Amino acid sequence: MLQLKVDDLLDFSEIRITDENGETRTYNIDEELKVNEFSIRKAFLEQPSKYAYWSSVLEKLKLYQESYELQLSTKKADLYDPTRKELIDNGIQRPTKDQIEAMILTDEEVQRLSKAVVAMNYNVRRISAFTKAVEQRKDMLVQYGADLRRDVEYNRKISTPQPPETN
Image (cartoon, rainbow, N blue to C red; front, side):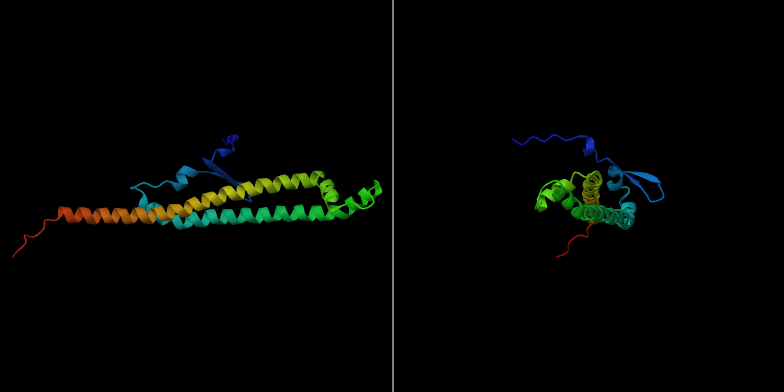
């Protein structure tokens, strides 16, 4: 049996976004995705801008993610030759690539950037899942609207008296 233990990070009820001006906005996921029969028209009209906003947030996060990954790659590249020389100076005649990379991983800046990449990957996956939920919300709105139209048409047919049949 597979048993998983997770921490409090599974709280997906809110997303907090701080923009480049330092302003923080908190979004309640339930409220962002909620639809009821009394607000379907409003939800349908707001859907494009809601999707545009969240897909833009996702793209911005992907940009940050790529930036961190580039910084990490650059830092590792910058450390490669000095680390190789250090290993040679410490008596290792022909250091292997694995030995050099292992030593590079002990660098504090590399560790900090690696943690930043992991955190950004998590945030990208989380917002990506939320953006997909917003896409699914659109599909649900379309289906719900069709169901409501079908119900109105059905109710109109059963409430309209039918003319008697003539033979």
